[in-house]
Length: 380
Image (tube, rainbow, N blue to C red):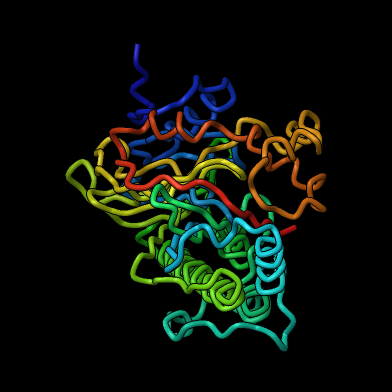
């Protein structure tokens, strides 16, 4: 028997949902004003709300259903050369070293900051002085830096052996600061969730700050791509072709129309996949990735998986996967072997099979290009 208090939902899953994930999804479906929930095949537990979920509300805005890394997303751009440029071990090593110098993982020296585009500067101040202080301090020092965890820069080859760049990063320190500041003003919605009314000044302030963080994160990825391009062009023998760029983000809340009405669509680890919308679905470190085109499935709220999705927590991965096993799983992919022990929680075996994820959502997106990894740079 169905529970009338639960919002309708549909799941596209590559494997059965765990008990904890199912409980978390039911909690979300019971939350006030939630009208629909869509569960992607990369779903896994996250803080407060699962990663790999899209949900629609009429008026309520849930910062926890966006998360802290607001605007986290992907950028894919092709080079004008083929992948043979990275066959030579010396060239690959120099390329990896050049990326390491060009892209800090954490913060830039104040004397070496990267100017933010005029569009970001012109998008207005954040909604309160404390957030403005974070923007002017951390936002400046962390712009065009990668971050850690599952963020990466990767060089890949497509089926025609063309060289591609892929970058995964987000809004760095500014995103969590925005989430925390607005959660402090949100009202309890039960079961540990908090909401803002999107029609009030408080809701509008959060939505403004989310859009700022999305623009900042997108500009940061593009600035990193420019820095990688300049650093490695002499090594690989070619430059990026920006006309090929595919950009998307997967942590946001936006006003869209679904089920015949306007609603707030929250995506946490879910990528927009409206009709014809291009996107990037990365695999794990050392496995294939895909470029896709959305089909606009209505029950998915026009959404798609944002990647492979974890099957092992970081602690579980570190306890089960040793350094030797990580090296085995990354055979054929250039990476900094000195970091092997510290990268064990990012091993391919810690993630779902990207091909199973793509098969599970065949009615959400069409795969337009499959890419194999050649070189991966991770920030620590």
